[in-house]
Image (cartoon, rainbow, N blue to C red):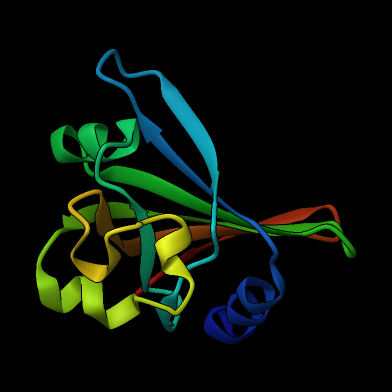
Length: 139
């Protein structure tokens, strides 16, 4: 893979589901489907919406380690990004990625106390394609 940012970026842009993984208080991994990231900066930073009351937010506050996984079912390839999540509840972060129609999930709007932002920062990744895995670092 010559250019991980370009290759993985294209895969992410075509993905229809994002899987986020985190650990519970006993260290067991949990994976959950999420809406795709609202914003990404290369393949290093991602901003996702979620409910403040969700278990994952509680677990991320105790242990920020996480994985985002994106899959391209059509070509049977995928990318796993490993990093950490910061839970953002400030107005600026919430406004940054708010979209029309979000009141479906957060009825009180952008100031809904049950709305927060997950800021994922990737450190490294693993790309699967053509029966091969390629590990890469993210700077």
